[in-house]
Length: 293
Image 1: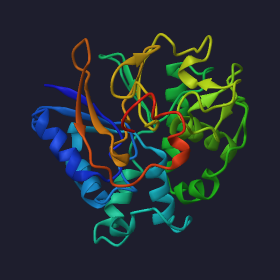
Image 2: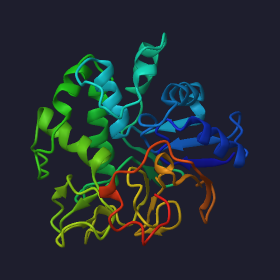
Image 3: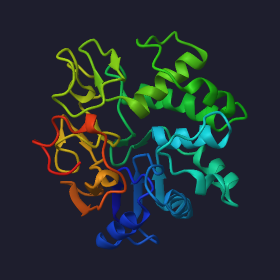
């Protein structure tokens, strides 16, 4: 049985199917780990969601910010954005079933046998894997409960900026969610900078990627993540025991599959035509480091 981690699909269903054909994925025996952002911005989010849901036990999915945005939109808290491509899901006959399935997925997943963790964006430097799993479980419990609609109402926003284990209620859930689904940069004290979104080299001098924080408690743990398509090493190599696998399929980059059931891990990539043009702010210093984003 082979196990592959798959980078951000974002509704690029045709590319996903082509990549799975390339790695000879067999749904009867192999397993896929999806690092979040299954939907949005790409052209076939509905087909993508239906396909992954139908894989049942052969797929592990963690939620990304676009997946949570879909849930908030579906449950009438958030209006669709101008670039969203979520209408086919919202109007589908099986929309309710798909949304119910989506909100029961993981915020973070850890495999003890493989000693691997997958999440969408990042981990707060003060969190160990054990603590982070516990915190992720708190958010999962809310999402899977009757209180999930209230969660979407309080989910958006950057505050609080500083982690404190005594945080309670919606502020606590929002901070955990922001780390797992939005984090890219933080300062040396671990304070996140959620507004910094560009490639390394575009950020303020006092900031660095979350995985480069000194004394990060999870530095000895192997972590797979997506979310950050402008990382020069995304889909190519690891840094500090972390594997970035969002290689920008949506923007005309590549879709990445990382085989993780045997070491060394092996990358397989599919060049993608790109469903959208990348925002210029993501390109400022990425062009000289990586040809496609």
